[in-house]
Amino acid sequence: MNALLAFLLLAAVPRADIVSYAADQSEGIWRRCENPDKFDLSTRDLFTVALAWCEAKRHPDRLTRLFDLAAQLQDRDPKSRTYGNFRWYWSHPNVDDHNAVEFCMQAGTLLWIRHRDSMPADARAKLEPLVRLAAEGCRRHKVRPSYTNIALMNAANLILLGENLGLPDIAAEGYRRLDDIVRYTAANGTHEYCSPTYYGVNLVDLGLLEAFCTRDRERQIARALLELLWTDIGANWLPSVQRLAGAHSRTYDYLRGLGELDTALWANGWIDGKPRGGPAAIYHALIRWHPNDSLRALKLPRLVCQCWGDTPEQFRTHYLLPHISLSTAAAYYGGWMDMPLTVDFAGERESVRGYFIPDGRNDPYGKIKIPAGPHQKAHHLSCFFAATQRAADAVALVVYRATDIPTNCPSLQTHFVLPRTADAFYIGDKSVEPTSRHLIPPGQPLIVRKGTSAVGIRIPWTRDNAPAALIDDGNKFGAIRLSIQHPVRPNAAAALWVRIADGLDTDAAFHQWRHAFATAQPEVDADENRVSLRVPGADGPLAIIAQAPYTFKAGVTLQPAPRRVILEVNGVDLGRQILEKLEPPK
Image (tube, rainbow, N blue to C red; front, side):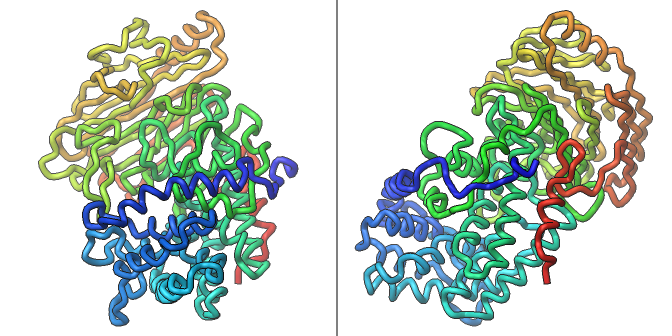
């Protein structure tokens, strides 16, 4: 295993190619600078394109304009709580996303470290007050260690700004905050677990810290956390679909589970195809720590378990077979963007995955954005969710409490989205074409066959006998869905049982597996205040017992129960092994 965890100092994509691509991609943002009111500039873009052009040795005459615009977006009132921070967008009257200073300083810090002596004098004179005030903005920005991507970014910015601006107190605060992150992770795992967006951010945060920090101790920490993240990515990598599979804590792409991580995957040769990442790809030209290729070929089948918080239910399971995987989070992450129950199939990277989603906005595919603070995001519902998994079987319980249901909610539905391109669909023992709408009788399974793999979904119970159907709504995404239509009322609820299989090479093997799943008998005992669900999994029993008011604090029993592991792969806690090599944080 040690050989698999070795890391190399060699990127797959040549540095010059990344620099040229990032600089080319910056031209569109420059055109927006001519009319920032019209195009609503993003502050982070101003610093990113400046870095891309400095690395490419292009357009030094443009830097002054970029820094002038950034200065207009920086809070320069010493009495302000957000002194030194930035407005995220040009149109925003105030600093309403405190993370802005962190994203700006990812590039701003590198501009000062690498290019202050080579840029025009007037540009340097404008950059220096920007980054000095931003150092104070980062210091005032208090980030909890569980907010993984921003906590790492904040600590790295403080360290690099402090070391390179002659501000030892700022650097010391960064060292202290990085220690807090290590302590949290060693005890609780990575909180923003398996995010196809924010794992990409984390890799940049740590890669830049490892490359530019002046102290060996913090570089060692960065390397250990990079090793942990890349091992996590490798453990959850499904080679037959070439993506980070399984349950995700935060995603912006419900249908396919792709995100900013793609830039790191491309730069390190894990995926082929055209360059990606836009101007922000420039960071990957500066990172020198890269994963060994062996991590994307870990042994299958593979059972991955990991904690993601300090309470027992903050636990994730992922079972990977060659052509399909099943994954659960025992509880909701809580950000209205998580995917806590998923099935990933072999196929093209852009193909639709299988996922559970609670829906009160008629948006099963996550395409309708709504206001989310200063941004627009396709949030789904928050609800009570509990799940447990034993290899190829998983069960989940969802309850829509009164506080989970939006005012004037038009419809309350539990969906399980699936790819329309599967080879065959069965309801019970009847083959159906995935067109229009097919009712699913109570107790009957929905079976989906794709190649030699299959997934079965059963609905052991719904409150109010809520009806279920397989629906093809004619969407352009290549998705169909199993949908449970709940009455819009507090404590509407449903239970799901999902089983996967692979290696079903013959029709006889497939029908034998389908029959075994269809005839297995779940046990449900439920009333308004309590639900007890038990199913006979192929590898042992699974159970969920929950009671009103349907919170984990009120009492939830899961079988099998969550365990305290950092990143366990086939019974070995690789995550703990990696972090135990570090000197204990002060």
